[in-house]
Image (tube, rainbow, N blue to C red; front, side, top):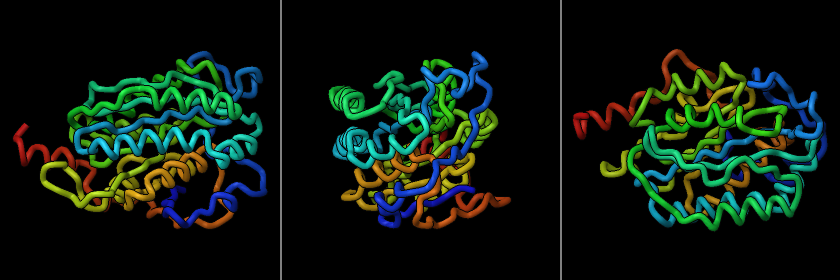
Length: 283
């Protein structure tokens, strides 16, 4: 089942209290044929790829808040508490920024987070990199770029997750559903952070109901969910909520609102971004 997480509906302490941790998705075959439980020295609870949108539709303030949100979430007391709830007590993380189908830049190569010191080191690394912006929005490009990164991870997770944030639909590269389905076939879970803090406008390629688009066209896999951001003031809270849910690796104590099950026709066309681009610029 997929889940739609409403900001404010999940109280962090309640979400992490009590119960056993259940892996939501078993990893697919790895290049070296190893699974986490066969190599305790490199075993982690989750291999997490943070794929962050830096397209021009994101203004500089949003990009700065986004960076700060990830850095602050990783060093937060709640995040470090969530680490302890897993069977291994550690996760591996890589962070890259993306825009067009051929524009992805790794900011943080694979890093192990197993406590306050390693969390501080990753957060500092995120913050020291200059902020950049680039043209176009290719969610499919981000997914295709992310998939082989798991084969490069020296750690072996019980779960493999791609965490995608963005403020618009795919408008460049391959259709997003093909990339999503390929990732799911490999046992990878995709979660989403649709950013909806501005009113849709002609110049930014924003659309109404971006959260529906992410639910029906982008995310997938057991336990997958979206955390929409509709209030700029809750940007950092949303990022923290999403990371906590991914690291805890289970359904929270407080019930979430189930996302609509996959329908025959998505509520928002999965090709809406490509259509808007074609209609406006004819290419």
